[in-house]
Length: 513
Image 1: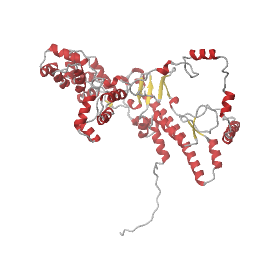
Image 2: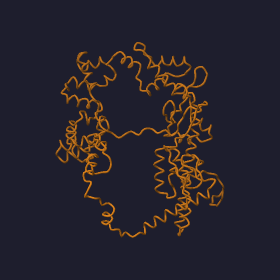
Image 3: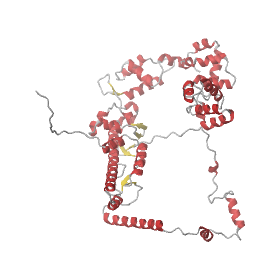
Image 4: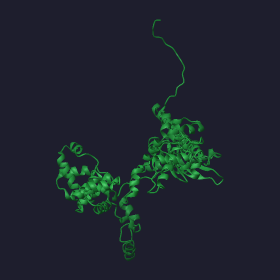
């Protein structure tokens, strides 16, 4: 059979990722804060988009960006009158702007001041001075406000830079110090190696080390440390309590964390009473000296979905519309500028902006509806958790929700990313409700992995000092409660909860620091 080029036609069906579809997918996985920032950027780029401030102007039949149709808007029955009124108001405002733009600037400012703002200086000086004194002697007409004189909280960086400018005179050392200040974290620890810093600044490592030694003498004590032991050592040196025994103690803090008091006494070569005093001194120190200063305020989580008990039974699920941007398309402005466009490029630009605005509004509407559908199905399946707590959390995977609402698993995954739900039991990420299943030893309903972890933590929290539960014992207890689980799974869950082993827990309960 000879091979030769030829032309052929065939028809296939394929999904094309258009820019509009990519935008819809991107909006779906955004949180409300990210969505607000994205919409603000679109408002700056698209003149046909505007924020819905609750007004009654006729902007077209498009829905608001929070996914709810504009059914509460008046104007459907009297659409023509509303449009005519809106057009009249718009025309009037344009005439005013035109008059202002064309008005000549022939005003004599000196005459305007003397004519409108000149006051009678021949009388009433005493009354004016009395009123000025009652306001606190200020030159503003506003009332005296003591909050304007409150001192701003000092940040850690400002506090260190002030000391740097006073204590270090050499310009090169001061530049190194500024770089080191910028490399400390919120707790006051230095993040970075001396060699890397010296290579970056093109100077000798010894000079960086010497500058660091000066900075470690700054207030608060313990600042610029590179480890917990060094942080505590700097504070003890400030108190003149860093003797060889204490230094050996700091070099073996891992033994203190393990509560291995016998080994710690042997390494430090001290008695039980001296070791107890050393432990008390360590407990009086600050392991994170930088946290005493002002830092950026951590933004609290804003839930996208709110779940409330329904008086008639069940749960009421709703979106937090106040956190969602409401974007509308200005159809009247589109009709006006489209009619005034002359060139082909201008008309194409206007049409393209109009289509983009319409697609954004529809994408936001679809996003809100999808989030609401997914959240409602999650609430329906996790009814036991909402009523009785985490021990009644059911195993759930993305496919369960996707099949129930007739969507793809990837869509459900995007919806549950960075989205939070406010429930009577707290605020949870939507991903929290998806947990793997652990089979029942009695052949009944499977148990949620999160519920099993909660059960393990509950058992360990209730154990007595003389009856510490081993992993094998926990397995026996769980199996007696109908949970078929392996020992290695219990160990994995315990380590994920950051719970030490039974040997270390027994040692901790027997030794009280």
